[in-house]
Image (cartoon, rainbow, N blue to C red; front, side, top):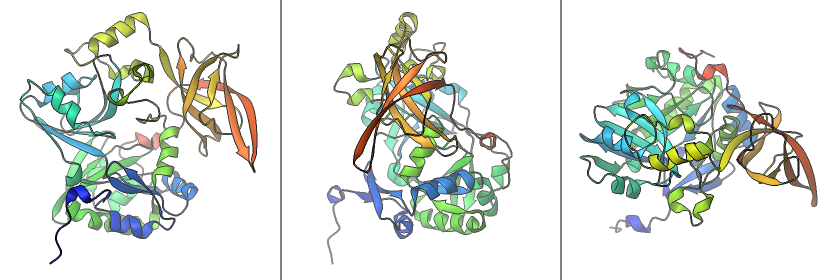
Length: 397
């Protein structure tokens, strides 16, 4: 009999959906997300994005780091950890959050799922178990990582609710944004949350790994006539920029991994001041954030509508006197907005809507490099936010 392979020799794992994603990945494009291999694209990035915005698309989010936090002090611990008031996230709801170090610099952002009394799940891009355990000293709380125990898919786009209806998920009619429901599915339980990273109507589906492939097959059968397609990370990246969402390691440097500590950002500098509740009890970074609020921030995250049609990738941002005041962190040509859009970090006090900013863009066409200086308009809110994202019950299209 062949000896079992030791887990530590498995350099890259596969998700519970891998047999399905591998069969669908005609381009054979993959990358490593934490310990898992995931698809960058399946058949055509532009068409996968088009399916998302005009029908619906499925993205494998199983590698997302999931922490189960429970026990008598679960709420008190989370309120000590994150900047928002977790008591306002009622049972059956999901809340976006950030957490900081003592200097008020963002370590990571994520979502808190209130699953039951004294029972929460914290989802994040980065692994946070060490930080969570250190932060839990003195609290009567249990913390464990359950990433491998939960398979998950993001089902996003205007026909996503129609697919769930065809699947028999009646709870979709009453689900408001950031709510969650648990429904039966083929002898198991399927948790459906009205959440996502695309800025569109959409859901995230959470199920035991034993039922992962059955869920994939059922979704694609139910969505056969409404244009359902698999989607890779490249198309998802386009959607999250249009939604104006930030990403760790791209739009900010996680504070616990920074070598140059002056390169990190606070929630106030990432346009996340609405997530900081100074009225609740003490949380990590509170004193530093209070001081920043009084003294002023160093930087400001801005959303830019860039003149022309060239993506402002890694562009310097200048003021009217040609002084460098910031840099672009994320950029794209937006098919929905028909515009070049970007997220950028600029020095204070620049970044007000009335400011005239310029992006220095370099691009190559057929081995020839060109440079252009394009005017930028500071925007507020998302670049693209369709009304269907918030409508309840969701449209049946």
